[in-house]
Amino acid sequence: MGVDRLRQDRILDEALANGADPLHLAHVFSLGAKASLRCTSAVTEPEAEQEPNTR
Image 1: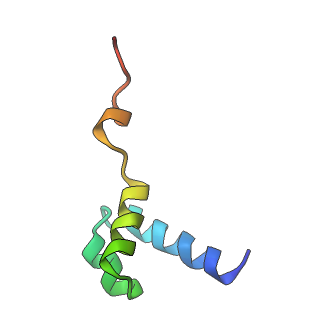
Image 2 (image 1 turned 90 degrees about the vertical axis):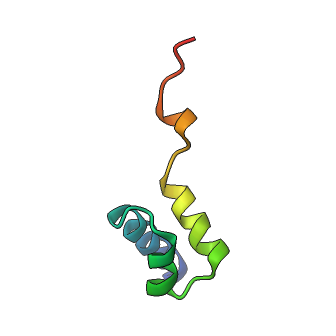
């Protein structure tokens, strides 16, 4: 596993552990706004995907 992949995994683990807070990720990993939002959206599911479709 390469260094970049390890960093990505660490960022996603941190997002899961801290409630997917984009400001926290940006500060801890020196990420920009877009990158931190991308990481947090990767670990959170939209409401539509969380509930099974009953129709």
